[in-house]
Image (tube, rainbow, N blue to C red; front, side):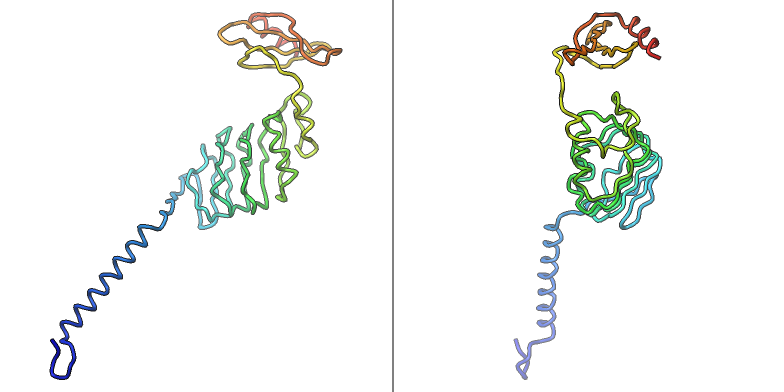
Length: 238
């Protein structure tokens, strides 16, 4: 009802006002629920974290949940020898990445894929196995515009002690020979001027010894020996 002047009673106006706010509140709640939930990041005890950087010293792992917006991540002097695939895939804004002095020997393929903003990569203090599994890293280093520290090789063979991977090319990682023998491990050793390879045969205490054929340019079977005798040969080469 209206009063004599044609105006609504004050109580009716208040009800309309409250009802409108109720709909606005419901609308805002729906928007909040439909928005993607932001990952909650808790800074690990070994790390120092800010809005745009994470620094971890002596950590045994890489933080699983890190803000997408960080531009600097330093994980140094750690105790983890390997990194899982796609570890940095959700950090597109990363500009500085330091993995120095973590005793890392192998990086999973395409680990740095998607880090288009990366300016500096520090891999010092890690001795990588520069074998066929490292080929992708060689290709990435040649394509990337990021400044990369020296990358040292722990092996194999003539690559041991190599200061940087840059001089290597894809041709250095061409598959040369495939062996049909199943093996749990393979070890090269040298005696006099000859090259040998010992293959640990699964479910056996024996090892298959192969000798490098300088004429055929490949390895050929030489003998089968016991693990004890292999240890003796291992000592002889030193």
